[in-house]
Structure formats: structure tokens, C-alpha cells
Image (tube, rainbow, N blue to C red; front, side, top):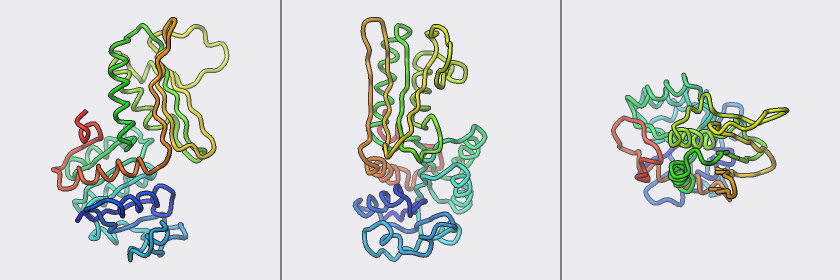
Length: 266
């Protein structure tokens, strides 16, 4: 039985993860974490998630419950993820990270942690989204410079980073397939007299509103035709189910950095 810890236990994603753990054979909730100021600290994680009493109290300190889990799933913010990674590295605990918005220095720190622990990172845990990554690579290589490429993404009003980590990853896949440099060729929104579009650019458009779970489209706009590859998430459960697969994959793996492309053999 793999004992799983989750962060953000009282949030929407945390509650969904608890439900997914309960529904996945071979997994059990070992620990639940929240920000110290969250009123759910001290409450039963199962009752908070609506799945019944589990006997796992929501804790504010990962160090205090580190012996209760084998793998931790983290969907929080970069600073919290880095602090948790330090605890896991010191105690040889595996991590599944879905947090986005890291700086280059923060990513370097996490890559350093992967020298000592098994660390699974993906900007999007959805199996469908990771299949889309492969599809947009194939399309980009086939179409080349004959089309203009745009990445359009939409999320709920509470999302704090933009573009989304998934959209950025799509941009990276496109840049690699097209032989471009995302650092210099990305265009994040347009306003005013911009002039004619340069073919080598990769455009990003961001929408924030309501309770949109997550939508991503890559548009290949040519003369006389347009191809669009789209993924729409209808609920958070598809991300949670992907995270369960990641937990099963990374558990007892040698120290290293893993991702969904490796898990899905893409």
C-alpha cells in the first residue's frame, strides 16, 4: 500500500485528490497538509473532502508527519513547493509536483533535489493534455513555417500565473519542433499598432474568468485553412487521476526527474 500525502487539503484540488486516492486501489491517504492560517488545520481530511472520517488530521507542518507518507502530491505555489522539496529531500520521500510558475532558479533547485529523490514534475497531470503535447509536435513538424502558430488558454478567475504552465509547455514543444527560441520568439498578447505578424513568432492569448477548469488550443493558421488542436477539462478529477498514475509510477523509482511523457511512453 502506497501512503500518499497531499498539499492544499482543504482546497478544491486537494479535496478532489483525496477522493481520487480513496477510489484508487493500492493507495491510501497518509497525510494532509495546509497553510498554517487555513481554518481546516486540525480537522479530519476525509470529513473536509466529504468522503467520511479517515483519521488523518490536516497538518500545517510537513516535517511533523513525514513518517506517515511515501509520496507527496503538491499542487500549490512555487515557494511552498520548494520548502516541501527540502523536507522530502532530507527524508528520502518521493514527490509528484503539479505546481507551475517556477523561475529558472527555482527549477534548478528542484532539479538538484531530483539528484537525491524520485521527483515527478508535470505542468498538467491530464493524460489527454500530455497526448496533445505529442499531437501538436507532430502537426508543427508537418506544417513547418507555412502557418502562423497561436496558443490560446482559459482558466478560472483564481489562477495566479499566466500563461498557464500547460500553455508554456505547449510553446516549448512548438519551439523545439519548429526550430525556434521561445525566449525571443514568444509574443504574450498584442495591443496597438503592432505591424504585420512575423512568421517565426509563437503567440499566446490568456483568458481568466468564472470557474473554467482549463482549456488549451493550439491554432495553426495558414492561407485558406486553419487547424486547431484543443483540450478541454470538464472537471479536476482528470488531473487527480493522472496524479494517481504518477504516484504509482514514481514510487520506489531511483532518484531522478520524471514526467508524464515518460509515464505514457511518448
